[in-house]
Length: 562
Image (cartoon, rainbow, N blue to C red; front, top):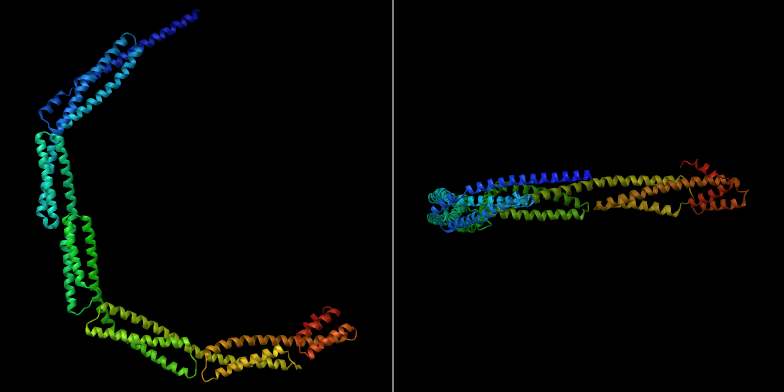
């Protein structure tokens, strides 16, 4: 029980200590707030208000001043009074030991004092801006006046650099002068804020004119000096060339007139300060002038090249005709003994027609040069085309000549080949004769005589009045292949004959021992002696021998050396 009482006493003492501590804390906060409000009350703005009233403000400046002054009076008379009232209430509660209520009250007071201080600072700044506006405007106005006078002097003294844009520039400068006059009037009346707006407009317009001058000068330089100078030069050169009887595909006078019209149009647009349009026009003018220079240069260079190439082209043409005629004589001579390929004859005839066309074209160009009625760039292109055609003809006729040489070479090769084929055929014949056979298989004889006829036909074609080497060359290849096949057939025939003879001879030992074998032997001999079917004779007797003596056929084959 005693412990409980002691505990209660301790809790009460702690609570009383906390209440005392909170009261002291509230008192400290209150003292700080009193010091802050005292400082704010001493920092009055009455002196600034008095100075501004003496300035006799007007217009927007006066409206701004009245707004700030009313706001200041409201803060001092209402807001600050209410803050002081709340502070006294908080102080009373704290002395009455209503520390929690006092603490809450002081928190609200602290927020309001901070807001009051910020608001007073804003109002003070507004008054300072108004006080400074007159002096600031005066300084700013003086600077802008100097810039204006400098720009005006530049435009007036250097109007030759701005051409048709000068009038518009002077209008803009007059507008700036008017703005400066209005600014002065507003300043004299005391409307410094409105005057500041005019000064901002002046600054903006002065910057615009400064930038415009940087753009105008190079544009007008092109229109006033560069382009006219180039056009005069083009006119001079053109007239000089005309006197020298130069001809042109295009109407140069019309093109020069169009350039001059576009220069005039650009000047008008420059007078309206339409810089984008002027820039676009100027780029087009540059291109047109470049094209005119290129046209004149093209014809000047064209004449030089034409006069330089006229004789070499003629020499090349004469050379091509000479070569063609020489090839023509060779072809005519060869055609007496050979049938030439249609493609070769057609190509040669086409070349002849082309040479005639080239000659006519060259003669027409040369006559035009003599008559002073040609466009030299076109003649130069004609000469280039002529040289190209002559190159093609030269290559074509070299190919034709090579083909003719190849044809003669092919004839020699063909004759040698046919002689070789005839010898090989004779060898095949002698090989068969050495076998002393009663007869030969029909298919072999047919193939032999087919090759024989092919060789004789080649001899006939090679001895013809007109040799067709294209056909002969193809037939030589066919005959060579057929002869190779005949050689293989002869080799096979010889082998089967020798093998048949040995097999039949060996088979005699079994003729009387086996009736069935004897029948097969008789059949095989009939195939050999009567039918001349040596392949089947080998097959029949081989099968019969293997049935009575396995391995005998292979043994006999090893003895054959065909």
